[in-house]
Amino acid sequence: MKQQTLDSLPDGHATPVSTFTAFRATLRRDLLIALKRRNDLLNPLMFFLIVVSLFPLGVSSDPQELTRIAAGTVWVSALLASMLSLDNLYRADYEDGSLEQLLLSPQPLYFLVLAKNIGHWLVSGLPVVLLSPLLAYMLYLPADAYWTLVFTLLLGTPVLSLFGSIGVALTVGLGSRGLILAVIVLPLTVPVLIIGAKAVADVSLGLPLAMHYSLLGALLALSLSLAPLASAAALKISVN
Amino acid sequence: MWQWFYRMGSPKWFYEMSGKWLPWLYVLMTVLMSVGIVWALLFVPQDYQQGNTIRIMYVHVPVASISLACFPLMAVAGVITLVWKMKLADMVAKCAAPIGAWFTAVALATGAIWGQPIWGTWWAWDARLTSMLIQFFLLIGVIALRSAIESPDDSARASALLAIVGAINVPIIKYSVEWWNTLHQPASNFSMDNESAFGPEIWVPLVIMIFAVYCFFVISLILSTRNEILRRERRAQWVQDIVAGEKV
Image (cartoon, rainbow over all chains, first blue to last red; front, top):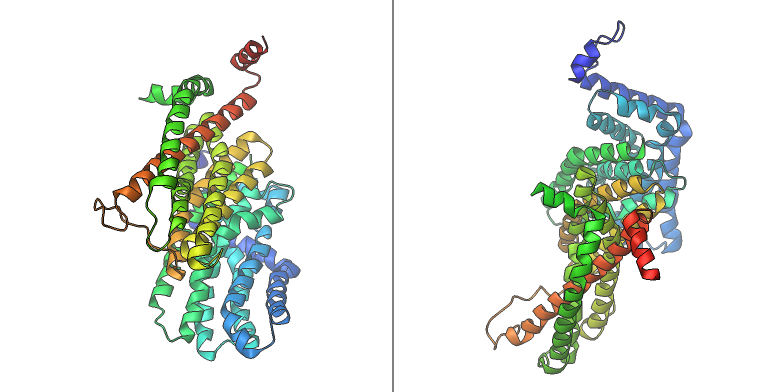
């Protein structure tokens, strides 16, 4: 149906855009915008760094104590950093009206939302993953747990972006949304936190990790397939 | 079938029908509650390990089991709201959230009171306690989202969506937390054998209490939904007629 209406448009609009092209264009646009705003790119990372360094100050500088809490600290800080960067996801687009254009486009909203979520993860989640070994070193995480930390974060932070996207989409039209976003999204992220932090803790005990990875992978698969649908529905509710 | 479904969605129909159900529910709840409480407090034998402390089970278990029913209820109401745009479903969902949050809070509180003498601590990061706490947070999130969005239509659809997402997440949270840590005693299996630790003389009053608390939940939900109906339909003629009738 949509294909037909597009074809029947006047000249210049006659070529329908394929879903994949639209996906790539959305992703490219979001990455370009992020590159143009260096501060937005840097802030979540600085926040991550600062929160992690608060723990030795607040708890203890004792290496043994820090080793025990290292996994949880890095994971909780990554969770909070991803939460803080979420606001960028749809807000500017909502304010300048490009979100409405996105909703009006004939391509399935699922893929466009997915492109935006992947873009968000690339600029806010991936840097956190890459920075995590440094912070793990500062917290005396045992050397054999480094790769586990990086891999679990690599599997887990996209889930945080995808879940968070639902919350942002629901609250994008509200005036003050910082706290309500956290209240809505944080409880949803509990499974990721539990599995990720436990994997890092378990590797130091020499336990097998296949189950942890499969569970995180399952969560990622589930949220990749369902969360953008919920985000798309939420955007349609928020923008009307 | 569909006609019945749509008629049920009319707030006026629900208001009139629920007015007829309420007296029966009151009677049923009073009977069940008094039988259940007297039986549980006076006639159930002491537990050989837990002594009289076991009696708090007769409040804790019903409240906890009903608080678990809340998210599925809100999710079903949410689907009806999103698909059929039925106002009544949204009113029920709106009223179920705070009631569910209260039931969850009471389950946590009675659990703490039970846990203190048995485990020696008011709070433990045990699987069921933790997943109850997270469920409480999720319900608070739904309530917060609803009150943050001003337009009633948008807030109905937004909280319906969040309730559905939450309902999908509740089992995932439950299993991940269980996998993480377990201290809570496993739920006891019902047994017909009186010699068993969980024989009929223990569980029959428990079943009565579960039904009694269910009645209480349904009554609270109906009463608060009726209030919501009156508030939202206050400009409708039939509501004005009721108000005029009460003034006379």
